[in-house]
Image (cartoon, rainbow, N blue to C red; front, side, top):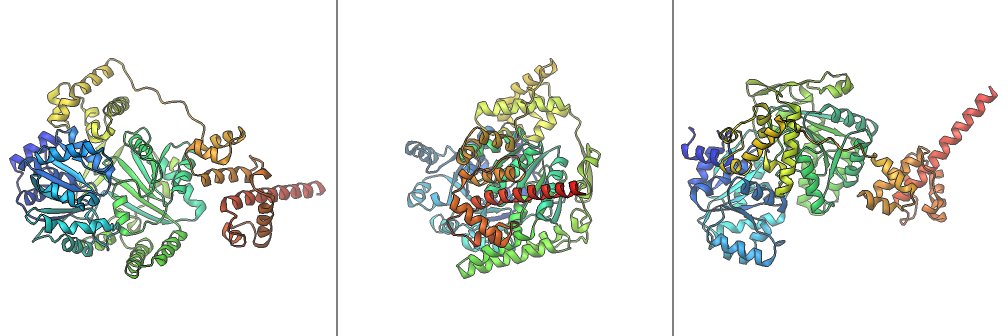
Length: 632
């Protein structure tokens, strides 16, 4: 289909792009034609733009249903930056502000309104929306409506009322990861009328899948080698628990690699601050639970590393798909352990509802087949989502012979590459960094500072692709800024002169501020706080870590002889009980020790006493060896 001049003009005017991505224009035409629509498009495929263009053309309002407040706020902020009026309506806003938003919406002042499914289910919301000039409803993360989906949310089931309450308003469902069964369920639940269906290919040719079964002691070494390898872009590390987030961040820090934690128990401001530091390249590695990732628009992620089995193929595809959104090669690595499968099986068996338990076991079976198979990873993923592939070998997964250099040999032996070749379909193209690295750091700093002043994420001010283009070919006029990818009319007006001024200062010798001095490692900081007389709880609070993480650190110090065990940490009765249990079952595993003790004795207490006993045993062995040597 030829590019519509009107749509092309809107795309360039607001988003600063010269062409649509595959399927986008066809989807937009379906929505403009008033058709119900179902869109399945991989992460990074450009789903949001498909429902953001129609309200501009129609001069009406699109209501977007989304599961996360943070995601809604980020999208509304991005739209404001390019000159499109959008708002988020939720219960966290003061009542007066909510009333003002509802009044402006009835007057047609917003092109997009973001709501949660819970908000839409309220009778007063339905009544208010009947007075809004609606273009369509867009359901984001639509797989959440299906019980067969990997992220089923009961509140999404309430969206079935849309067809009854708004029979003449088009409904569009968008998702990145829906199997054929889930797609059918979406159509049924939303009661879509003769919908136009757009299913993009699930094959991400630039991604390279690597799945490796690890022993516990080898996983950390492989992780360190991998993270050192990916030194040109960003890295996301997914772990299953909050404790593993903290342990992994500390492990990386101990080896000189800065990393940022992200998990659901952090307060919202801290989570957002950490995400922003990662997005703006203040720190290139982020360690998170599955709480991290929805709506993240970071193009230069060179690796996504999973340190445990995900719950499903859909979850893995969605999380791994956050790599390589710029189209350049990126690695999706899964370093899993046998115990991961045991935990998934245990949790599946604990589900009380028979139907949900069956679905969990089905997800478990498919995932085990995926990680243990020698078949092409790309082919198995495509087949899982109902796509037929034509190739026998992809050459981009471990099953088809791909092996990253850090897995083949120590990363430091690999020569540093500046040029990358990536195959997209049948065409190979080269991507090479040709800009001044000092200018890149200078513009990154300008972007961070500008974002702080505007109180927006750094990528909203300027995408990585825009920054790279400016570094490679610095503009000298507003007209040239206007030709930079991602700079439409409004963004050029906001930042064009500032960018030209920053480039002028750089030419005159201004440079990015030097990096701060190296801080103590996490373990050094814990040891210092302990030596100062702080309690375990106080150290955890000061360091922003869980209590169990700090006790784990201290147990390591004890076992290595760096800290002396203090009898005041545990009552004498508990210590005696733990020592007796250790004498019966040994010191190798904590669970058998715990099973033989009263419930009130915690794993943390056991960990400290076991570390003390292991140290005593090691010291005793050393003395024996010295005595034998003296006799000899």
